[in-house]
Every structure is written in structure tokens, then in C-alpha cells.
Length: 93
Image (cartoon, rainbow, N blue to C red; front, top):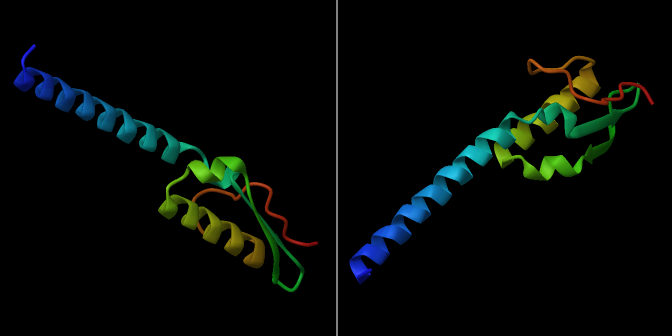
């Protein structure tokens, strides 16, 4: 195999890796983000605690941010803002 073939093979492998990485990111984004965030708020609506499950670290920043925001809003106003119900959100402590 000459250098040109070797370089082309390496480029092909890199494209394969990038494709798999993109596929994995799509799969991780599909993980239910509501299962990754828990927010505890008192009866006055003040947030006393935000907990992140280990799975939360696999989410991209935008998805995690939306999950945290939805969980906080769900805990403080009593209903989720997104289409999903935040998991383990405690409304009154």
C-alpha cells in the first residue's frame, strides 16, 4: 500500500468514526432527559436542591439545560413546561 492509499484509508476510517460519534450523540439525546434531573422546591416555590443523575453527564449542554429548566419550572409552578414530566420532581418539602 502506498502513501496515497494509506492516507485515503485513514480518511475513510476517520469519517466512519465521526459518523459513529454523530449516531451515538443522537442516541444519547434521545435518552429521556427528564430522568436525569431532580429538583426540590419548598411550598414557597424556592428551589432548595438540584440533583443530576450520572446519565445527565452524557447529554449535550443544550439538552441538559432544557431538562434542568423544565424541572425547575415544574417544581416551582407545579407543572412541566416541556412535553415531558420531570422525573422525581418534589413540589413540597
